[in-house]
Amino acid sequence: MTKVELLKDFAKGWFGNSQQHSIHAQLLAQRGFKKLADKIMAESEEELAEAKKVNARLIELGETPVVAIQEYPVITDIKEMLEYDCKDSAEALPMMSKALALFDDDYVTKSMIQEFIVDEQDHFNWVKTHLNLINEIGYENYLIEMIGEL
Figure (spheres, rainbow, N blue to C red):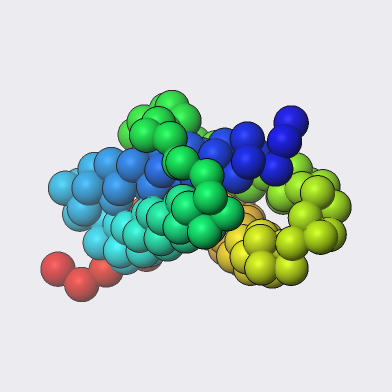
């Protein structure tokens, strides 16, 4: 895979994941889980910004971005949603770390990917914390915590 193909895949993935998180946030808000909905919507916005940043970098490199998104499932069960996110992040982190080696001669892109890795690790840690919280206090108590102020 070339550097350009990899960057296009990153953008495609983040555009799709942003859409997935946006839908999840809307579903959560509609069900009254405001705290969780707000966090997931913020994640959606961050992923959209990352996708746009990748496309901007492609343009700076003289390339043409593609209009495409990676497909992700819409998950209505909150625990399953978190488990999917955890698995997705766990798979993305090593792939992103391996990608760094491709950009040893491109400090700007390498630095950008390093920022993405930090963001993805933060998200992974957040999801793991919430899954651990579910195990500690129980699913029903977790859901009560995620309702927020009425």
